[in-house]
Image 1: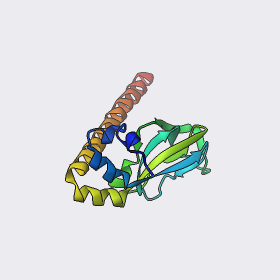
Image 2: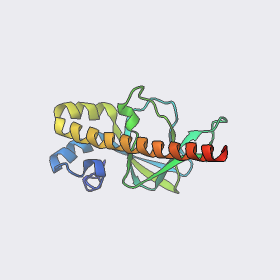
Image 3: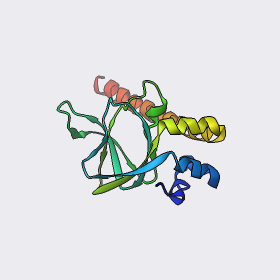
Image 4: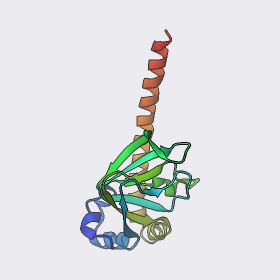
Amino acid sequence: MVNLDFLEKVEVFKDFNDNQLAALQDCGSVMEFQRGERLFAEGEESKYLWIVQEGQVGLRFDSQEGRAGEKDKVSFISEPQTFGWSCFVPPYTYRLSGYCESRQCKVVVMEKKKLIKLFEEDPEIGYGVMFYLVCIVGNHFHRFQDELAKQMGHDIMSNW
């Protein structure tokens, strides 16, 4: 079972009261992985919102051989960060693969179906979670724009 003390440390849930946290607790469960184990694969249906409870998770593109390579790493997620927001965005598939990067990982998986039902029952929770996720997506987009601008500038200067 998901620990309420842990949930209130998670940024997306920090403003919720004890009753709301208890309702969220019922949407999740804890899973454990060992270094190198895959949590989910790029292209699979995204059914969960994930939260790192212990350890680190690496998000990356899988190489053509089906094995993750060092060069394919995109980012590391650590306690108590949330990821897997693609479960709420069409086409509802993972864009990257997730792997346990530390000796072991403990993650909270929150079922999309249960979360959506909870959002319908308590729109305040739904609004709070979705607002947070929109901020995450916006930050990713801005970082992507910055990196693209840097790359384009580098390419222009190199060809000058």
